[in-house]
Amino acid sequence: MTAVLVQKLPEGDDWLYELKLDGYRALLVKDDERLRIISRNEKDLTASYPGVAAAGMKLNAKSVVLDGEVVAVDARGRPSFQALQHRSAHPDYIVAYYAFDVLHLDGRDLTREPLQTRRARLPRLVAGSGLLESAELRGSAEQVIAAVSRLGLEGVIAKRRDSRYDAAQRAGLWVKLKLDQQEEFVVGGYRPGPHGVDALLVGFYERRELRFAGKVRAGFTPHVRREVGDALKPLHTPTCPFVDLPSSKTSHWGGGVTAEQMAEMAWVRPDIVAQIRFVEWTADHHLRHAAFLGLRLDKTAIQMRRDSRLR
Image (cartoon, rainbow, N blue to C red; front, side, top):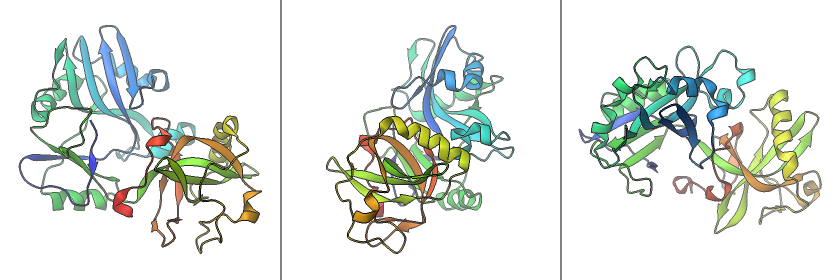
């Protein structure tokens, strides 16, 4: 079940608030002595997070399906998507699973029950397991936004307390408010550099056409440049996948790619998604001050469309 992006949080006793966690959304499925961690696009993540899998085996149920997020957190509990992506470069972070919903429990389907009833089962289920519960944020919408903003965290999720779990709906029973500019984009190419990737070329789909959004140079370390370059090499293609390149000119912020610069680029099949933080969209529809956060192996490229809130 997904949350609809909004510009203002709903208010009232019918809604509960949670942190928008910066990680990989995943189902944790325990069936007796077998446990799986499954991503949104149905990839098996179990081997990638052995600590989470071991904790899941300690859940206080014979069989259970939890919905939650795999997150890398520091000693203060602050999440970092970069640390989750590049764990060897962030040894001070630990990988945790924050559960926020219970979908099935010991053979019983709970998806038709109200969210508040489902969540009430979480404390007993995760007690002593090492898994964590995504806590409800108390206070008014204004108070919650102010607290989350002070901590520099990504955003807030609001959910109707009486909402049933329906993976097919986007009716606004769950909504999300982003407090920074952070989106997923399709990688369509890159400019090679001495360490692998000097700059990523990213875009979004519009009517099944991939449109260019900008060059991303910030946010990389030499290690990450090599790692991303290695991930992109198998996808090399001779053809530029962006329908609107080359640009007639470069923008002030380096957003365009001229005909002369096209020869500097390596093009890739648009199969990989990157998470990017940026300041704003420019007048010519390019990203300003964009920084790389990580690759989203849990997202499908064709789903990446420009956030209508930012048009």
